[in-house]
Image 1 (cartoon, rainbow, N blue to C red):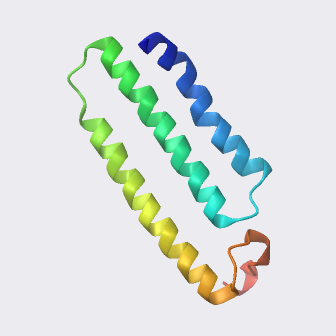
Image 2: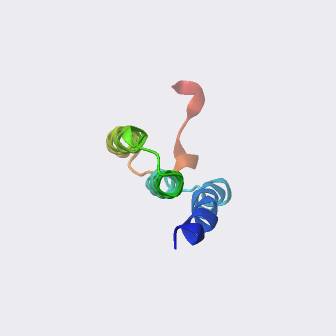
Length: 98
C-alpha cells in the first residue's frame, strides 16, 4: 500500500501545480490548489518515512504548520483583495499601483 502512495504522491503534488499554471483566474482557486499540493507533499513524506522506518517525523509537523500559516495568510489576502477590488479575479488586479 505505501509503495502505491509513494508512486501516486508526486502526481498529487504536480497536478494542482499544473492547474494553477493553466487556470488561475481566481485567487481562492489558486490557494486551494496550493493546499492540495501541500497535502500531496505531506503524503509523499509520510509514505517515505514509513518505508524507511525513520523516527524523524518532526518534519511532518513543520510542513503542517507551514500549511496552516500559508492558508491563513492566503485567506487574509483574499479578504483584502475582495474589499479592495470587489472580486478575487487575478486579472483585475493592477500590479503597477501596488
